[in-house]
Length: 317
Image 1 (cartoon, helix red, strand yellow):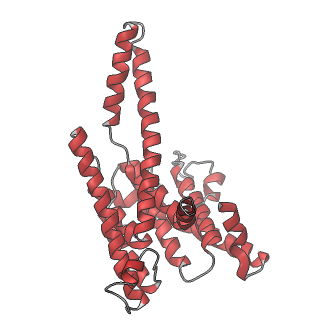
Image 2: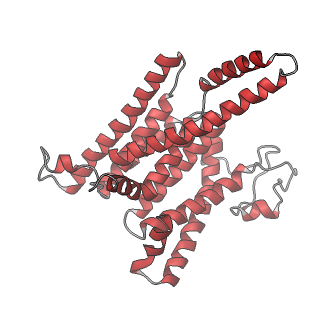
């Protein structure tokens, strides 16, 4: 499915132009990834993303322009600061390379059109949120709120009418496309935020611990506004599925590890009971769910319509 979409992407221009634009978009993505590293490092610390210039977090030495080339500078410096030789976190080239790859993939799957710049901004926002949540387990309002405003503006400028047929044929019949799209974005925001808030409420009632932070809810309001409600539901489904797989595997691994530490001191029955207790405790442990929401939202953006169409085709006779 994915390869078929990529192979059909350059229909409107020749292959040479397609690969040139692909490389250019990837280069822009790498540069944006370098900026996202600043965002990921400074926003959780409530620091300015503009001033001061980038510096080594170990010695404070300013990073020179030729040492700030995405990915390449990291390789040339062998992952160390030029001034103090302190290690540079692998997260920096990883964010740059990942953003470059996602930008290129977004262009390859969606084409060169008016929606592309908005899609690329959406991808960049998701990358920043995913890495911040992975490192700090927060999804900052300083990103979520402007991103929500961006999503609403984007849907007014580039209408997305997928899933708003009930509006177009109902009370809002005759509305312009941008108006329907904006209402659809609001519906998507309510569905995304409301569904996730409900999941968190149910989890708290079942296990007695907070299951969903408000940062996740606000993130899904933004995602819902941009993608619309059908792709938002798909995003949540993918996030829950992937988080469940990772969470269960992680819980079993930790429970098995803890149990093995006591295997010489406990009987087989006691070890089994300990394993069950550790597993139940692990299911209550926190997991940065924003990572999985980010994965789901990017998959939904790029191939979500194909996934939904494939799924619905299974019920067509």
